[in-house]
Length: 111
Length: 114
Image (cartoon, rainbow over all chains, first blue to last red):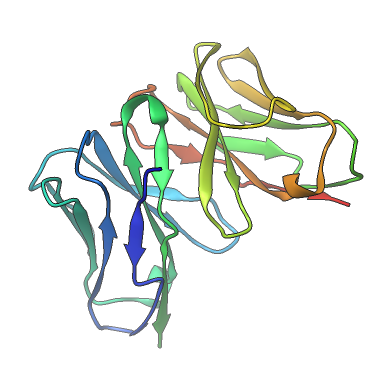
């Protein structure tokens, strides 16, 4: 069974503060790691697809890093805004097995 | 324009019935997927289709069958519905079937089996 772990499960952050959370995965047979943002009552939306060890990707105030050797990825949000409130999912891609999702980190930004 | 659409949004039905959920994507993608969000909120892959070929089939009961009339559609048929089938089902698509393409998700269909 492939385990993709995300921590923390939930997170309350003051507006304006920066935050980060973690996705851990087995480092063997790595293909790619996906990050998705999932707002309540909407569909998951892709943030990043990361493939190379040491990859860093950025989209506005959100960025992510990848360490395939030790099996983790961090997602960072700088200067949190209320619209950042969502569940952030990571998913491990391993070829024919498709995407295996973690349970997500539920982020709440408090004004 | 909605990129990936699903119908119906809500489906309430009795145990033992047969039902279908439709999915359409207008992105010109080659691969479509079905996911189930279980009671613990996990998203789990059920099927994927690439150019009408089933390329993933997880340990899903054979009461569930994907049907793809063309590249833009992947419908999910469920026979003899059981209480445990109650869940939210998401359709998704991606440009190709490899791991390096982001997936675009539909709005989900909440299935309730009574």
